[in-house]
Length: 243
Length: 243
Image (cartoon, rainbow over all chains, first blue to last red; front, side, top):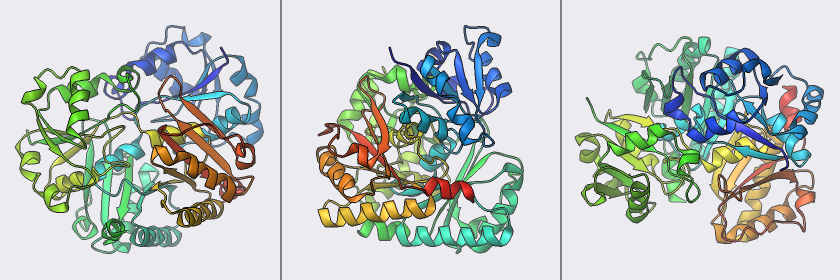
């Protein structure tokens, strides 16, 4: 059988393996001995938690993070070609909101089959649970760090949502969540909807959607808490439905 | 305990329950007696397949399809308030690429907690496995049916991908797949990448990404086969990385 690159979902929140991973993910992963991972230490912990049948020291790892150069990614090809391999993200599914796409691209360019496995994605689960438009949406990754650029970006996203009815999704480094939220509530129109989705799949999961005017002065404390943010501007969905 | 609206993922392909659904989804669903569904017949089949412990005739269903009016959605509120309920899509996760968001919005507007459950999404799994930019992407639903409008839309999506480095994702009614593909390969630049992802999670899953020039005259036969299409224009990702 020609080798396959499996895309292995990781949990989003501690001790939620049975809650979010199909049994199939565990059994496929248990047959793989070569892994592409963002961080070897956390990947080892994941494999040990799911009781990988091979001793962790006998598994092989290539690190693929945001610091990995294009050339280094290309050097992974022999591993893809040798036998079935798996890519694991730090959290959620590989290839979405992480640097994993470069390896998947390498696989396609070399005719290696890629098989995605079903699992949790904070971006997708936030969208599902937001009640905002799920028939047209965009994920924008991180917004700029500089405040004036960040505010300009928030305005541009709100504008696009208003014109196109497209839900705008983004994330932030968790210790900057509160700054981002303050900028959203001071920048956006009072009737724009903001969904805050934090600690997705955890026992203290928090997912609330309401108009920006209702969030003002009543923001939840999200310092250092993993969260996803979603915006939909007023009238956008109505426009969309009229098409 | 206040009632919760659970968002229940459905399979994408026949007989793949164990492959794509966590055990948790089955146990949560087994405790729910009120369901919001796109089609009662297929929902009953799903619940019978996962061996819902309550006889199917004693479960209660509200239909929520693209034909359901806003007023009819609003009339579902008493069911959301009465006890835990679940929403099931025809395929994949509810609230994404289906009309389910309206009910989720109703839940938020009335302070009812919404809990998304992890499962398969063809849009997300296609993106993971495409190797295209997963740090900035947009899902655009269906493209226009009229050919001149469809071609204009394909051009606009390619242009946006080129300018913003954003992967553009879309779907088509399966019996129109080949017309859409013909329009893509004749409209897009030869170096634009096109990923075709069909029969995701099935044994004959087909996910291939290559330049449009390589697809020309070599399109796979996808008539009536569920598929997701993804575009990324040349230089877009390079531009993105230079930021």
